[in-house]
Image (cartoon, rainbow over all chains, first blue to last red; front, top):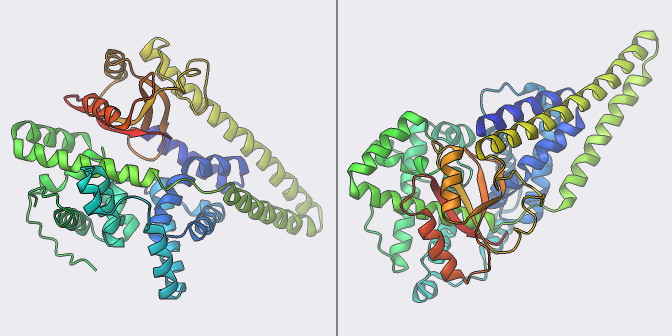
Length: 189
Length: 232
């Protein structure tokens, strides 16, 4: 089924390259939510994330004829999105960004200690996932949520495949440390 | 920044567990890991840990919501503006050649739009046929909005479910039937196999009860690789 979708994405890109607005609408409807969530996790601000995904899909409209089909369309979209998010973050004053990121991370759930008292392991885990560094969060999101392979993560993030595996391991190790500090010892690694 | 020495203190097989949970390995690698998991209880325990992480990562991302309609409006406003500019540039050039090129370009647009519509219809048809053939017209529907088959299924308790890539429609149907569960939406795009919204109970269950039900739903099954409660 995923192979069908990937093939269908490629057909859409071909149509978009010919100026097909309808194909663009289909592609947008199919991928906008996931691209938005990926960008939002990087920039931490909804308005900025919305502007960026608009830019991502506008780039797709303009550059569809340059898509070579060497990777899945969804991987291409995430790579463009990541590039745009990092560029936007570089453009913004650091203080402003930190404030926004903190605002985005802030949620109404209990902190890990309170959650553990309530024995809600899932909530503690989510809290710890949010406390990871952007680099670790990114690799975790790409694998667990976007279901990207080692090769695809390497392409999106622009690092060697071996580094993807290492980064994932250290992200999970850090997660274990955060959980331990919150009172949950997983006995790993 | 993370130090990226490429030496891992764990085996390569163990390092690949997150990708196995995400269904992002080829069948050969997946089979190899399945064998190792069956033979090594310690590894199986670590895989359970990976699945927990995956569940919470999905829930975290799903809670982020979706972009507003403003994004689509702005995007297509810009696209329409660009198309208009291209057209006026084309019609601004003089002579029979320019007129002919303009005519062809418009025809190409019409053709491309029609072709895309056909592709979408075909895709929907293929998916529906695939599902109906395997299920003999059962409750499994590719539904984005309520259809005749899913109407009335909006009430109950739901889970987001991903099925094992190796599970066929027969396995899935039997498994769902045995638990009185019904697929009401999906597949949602974005990964191997996609994610389905499954009604796991025909009434609203309190969270603890739902958690337990979903745990039972997932445990001891080769058909379901991921399940988590959803209110979406």
